[in-house]
Image 1: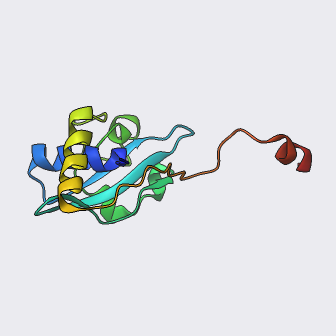
Image 2: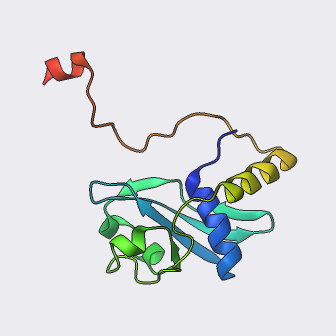
Length: 130
């Protein structure tokens, strides 16, 4: 079953903080973050935005004002001033918790990679086209 790592971080952050809404921002390398905004729902975290990759200063201001989980605030404290401190990394127990709840409630969890940007690697044909 596929579970987005940002979803698992959001579940843990909402449970630990008691906040009604959080931002999750993790290291995407290249001076970028993977991020998504979540609200507390009756059955856990509810995504308010799709997972996105961008430079920290391109995350909308209203989202950057939220309590923020993940490594984004450690790497870019000026962009994410409201760090929760934890969780920083994905915990397998929280992934399992999200997965179990989604199975019980009948939510589809396709096992498909979600690429938010093009890879650095190029195929032979792509290299030849440059």
